[in-house]
Length: 301
Image (cartoon, rainbow, N blue to C red):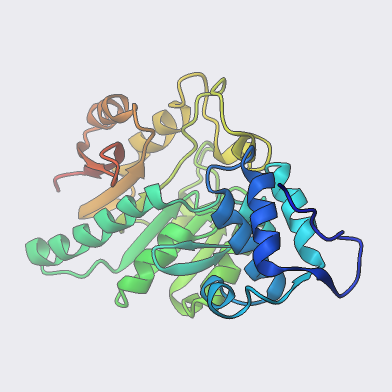
């Protein structure tokens, strides 16, 4: 039987229930909303207590429930993503600040970072050069760029986005990760003429996770109703931004450089064709589920 949760309008802690009991009740409430109901409940409880999830499970299960917990669960019941509720998301072993101004970094995108890191040593071996300059197109939270820079201490990066709110989040993440001295952020929109002129090309690595969802796609409410539409949707086929951005990559890449572009799971052939028409050779990287997830482009120069 489902246990009632303490009211979010109360103050202090509710002594009527233990954390363990409240987690069971919250899990039952969230089953209709989330496929990870127990995990969501634990993360939100840890946030309410101000402790890590591991500390929660090891040391706090018999404690009274913090009054704030019920309000957090109510937000999740309304499909608000856990990452927005707690304000952070882990990506590639790093913690990133997030808000509804940016997409939530997802594990699917880690294959792009892995491919970018693998491309960097290849450049050193072939050309005897280090990947000194990295460009992230549509940086959002800065997750892709900052994950690469964290593993390439010789590199400097520039993240661009058309959203000032997103750029503020990215700058905050660079600061918190100790990467502000090697990461800069600039407002730019690749659909506008002359957008690349202030960037100071060429770049050794280019990263991009452009909008690629079909405009009529059926998305989960947590995505459709909460994440920024401008970073999700890209025309009836989800290809509009690729058609604009990919042909411009060759003019931004240094000789021997690589551009890593995230794609939807069924878009590889179309994106490869867009690149080929622009003189770019491409190959596909798959994610851990075996889905085509990233296209790596090179100029062959």
